[in-house]
Image (cartoon, rainbow, N blue to C red):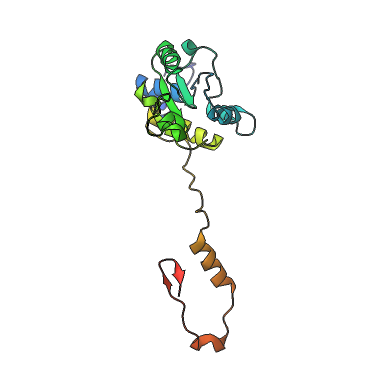
Length: 208
């Protein structure tokens, strides 16, 4: 180094600090964090979708709050509601007008399989939107809550990037009859004089 010159680090700091990824992974990360759903609802599940975008559940935390009014600006179609055969051509047209890459979320039992409208001899309901075009994420429920839609969007992000951004939250099991009996047995104190009492035996759900 010459006298009077600016001292320069000889270690390759640039390579240790900045890490480059492949272009595909970078694009997938950008797409997963900026999903633009289409402003599109068919039935009562659309109310839950609206609630997911409102302030209480705040879909903006996950970058998917920009509901676009045009299919040409959208990359996610959330089919939220019953698809009847009269509406099916319009839904297919909206899907065809979306640019690639595009993804589909089937929200609710009606969009997945026809829901409660499926019976022998029915003629007006499409029994699953996957009969029209491919579906990436299924969200069961009638209707599913806004948290379920957020979980479906996280599943779609995981499908795009190959990893999950948020940890999976396992809800506690709902209390049933067995849990209630166990809790009552633990709450009732046993005295020393009850040692000779006969033990109750449960057979097929009945206490003998």
